Length: 291
Ligand SMILES: Nc1ncnc2c1ncn2[C@@H]1O[C@H](COP(=O)(O)OP(=O)(O)O)[C@@H](O)[C@H]1O
Ligand SMILES: [Mg+2]
Image (spheres, rainbow, N blue to C red):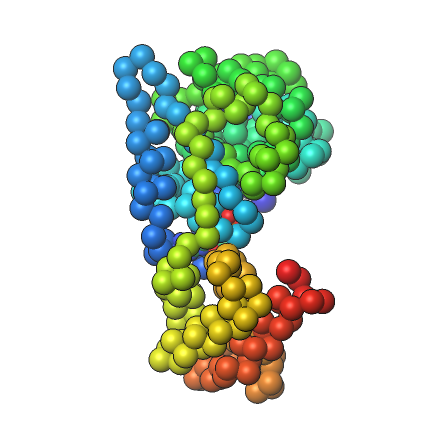
């Protein structure tokens, strides 16, 4: 992978690549106007203030990433995603090293997605921030207040954020409930937006947009899905991810039944029947399935 490099202080550093939303995210965002408006307002700068760093809180699959991709699209800024997990260290938040592909050198410095966003004026998305250990989060304090800088011990450099830099974080409700985030982070990550599952009509539109091949059969199949869902889970709502997985598996079951091994190998898509949705639902949600 060829990387863009930049001189920082006396060292040449490689930048993290931006994330460019591709397949499956090209479709329009369904709903979420209020959430997008709130974040865009929080990112505006008032004289004497720094832009805020909102925190999205919601169960897996509700659409947190999808909202962030939309925000990047609306603002036209490059998006850099840092995936939180327990092994991330305070140093990783700024910069890492890896063996170089260049025979002239042993190691390359690679700026983290956060540091790259700061240096280039992009958006940093700290996903699953609740999974980071408190110690690893410490360097975030100056990033999130009026100092807007990040220190890298490895580089021995301070990275000052460009004015265009914006930050947004996400965590799932369980991680937040466990008070996983230290107070300094909680008090700086504002506003907190609770993201729930979209209403049924919006879930229906998400499936319709993503599963175009269902065409006029889509409505009936969606109804079959709701029938199954109600029987097992009643009033609760499925997440967009749960629902999309069901339809993706139903389409694949239909293809497989028709002997298709390569997607797109048929001139016309194979018809998906109610039984495929039932089978997919059974696989994904009933005891023994993934739920
Ligand atoms: N409002 C929406 N409009 C269109 N697609 C959505 C929407 N919400 C979720 N999705 C789709 O549902 C799936 C799960 O969403 P994702 O953003 O990955 O959830 P999370 O980050 O909360 O786990 C993705 O395929 C995403 O594109
Ligand atoms: Mg996510």
